[in-house]
Length: 120
Image (cartoon, one colour):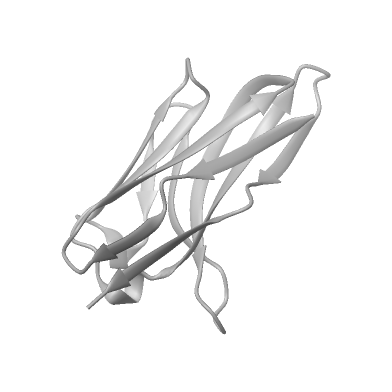
């Protein structure tokens, strides 16, 4: 079994920073790519950033220059550094990962989400 656990969310004032972590554990052979998504109340889930196994990153336009996704392959952990936060960044942030297990199956996993609230 594989689990993704997010942490690092919280309440911050506009202009502030937070760093989210997504730790993968379990029967992992390799982590192919990892993305951060967010979903605000009444809105669809949207992709924020993604990083692949080679470290190539893609960002949504609305976070470019403010957010940075990175990964520590030794710790099976992906981070999302969020700077210059805006009230519209308020959402539940989810980690999503495509992982090949030691049984040689590839699945997509989701974490439970972490709340980020940015006050004006």
